[in-house]
Image (cartoon, rainbow, N blue to C red; front, side, top):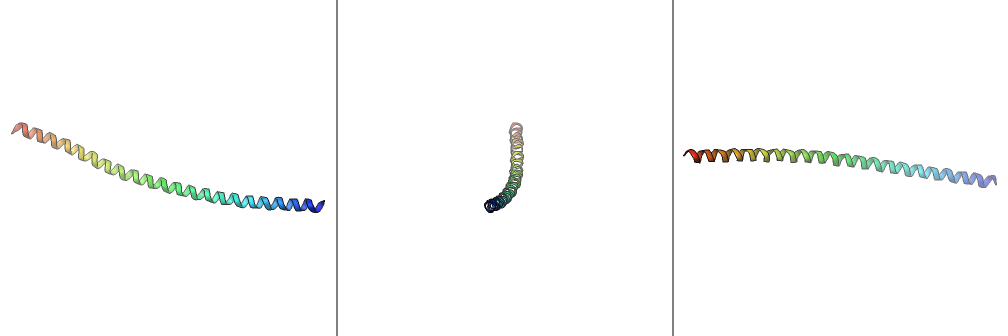
Length: 79
């Protein structure tokens, strides 16, 4: 009786150890996922900044275009 009880406790201990190791592996995986997600976040931020940089160029060009049209109209009117 005592032997089976000790064996049962030993098996439970082993199971708990295995579960602990599994949880540690899950924790490591989650950490890796977290790092990957932060890298994606940084990449997206950089991409967003680059896109905004080009968008400001487009806006500048559009404003220049409007001024050029205005200059052309005034030139045509006065000549």
